[in-house]
Amino acid sequence: MQEVIFAAITEGVYVVTSRDQDKVNGMTAAWVAQVSFKPLLIMVSIAFTRYSHELIKNSGIFAINVLNDEQVDLGKRFGYKSGRRVDKFAGLAYDTAVTGAPILPEAYAYLDLKLVHTYPAGDHDLFIGEVVDAKILHPEAKPLIFKASTFF
Ligand SMILES: Cc1cc2nc3c(=O)[nH]c(=O)nc-3n(C[C@H](O)[C@H](O)[C@H](O)COP(=O)(O)O)c2cc1C
Image (cartoon, rainbow, N blue to C red; front, top):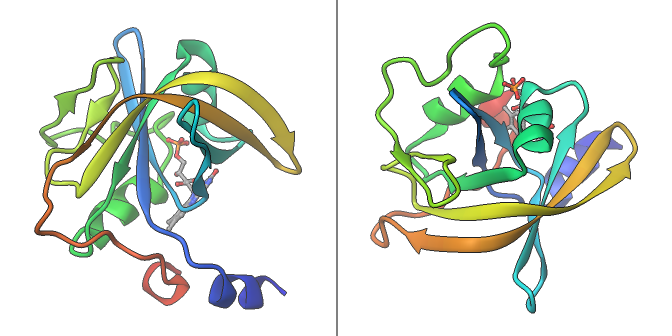
């Protein structure tokens, strides 16, 4: 059934970043969606086991970097190793959002979020963030659409 879901549901590819004091990290996520207009709320579904889960829970902030269609390499860089063991930002330039979360300067766009709700969902938690800032960085680029064949 998972193959059907991969083929049937269209998702983007995002790098969800966070910062807890001096520790910065990011992880690739496909399960991101807007869930409210007023206030502007965005959901990201993150497995309990991810280091990002711990950082977002502790700091209460995160940013969603929307990858462009030439950034599959960044999707892999942030999607296969845990920030518990490696510094995924090593050698990578980044900016800092209002909340303090890292922003990838070449991404299509970013959303900067303050955590307002957390709901359990199976083996993941749904983190709901209120948008405090949002910007299209490269309007000429195209957002990356997730294809299982590209990543797995
Ligand atoms: C294309 C792609 C999409 C992913 N989407 C999610 C997701 O939506 N939620 C999630 O918990 N993990 C997702 N992952 C897995 C995490 O990115 C991966 O486990 C990462 O190493 C976690 O890093 P961390 O431990 O530093 O937080 C995805 C991975 C890839 C390659």
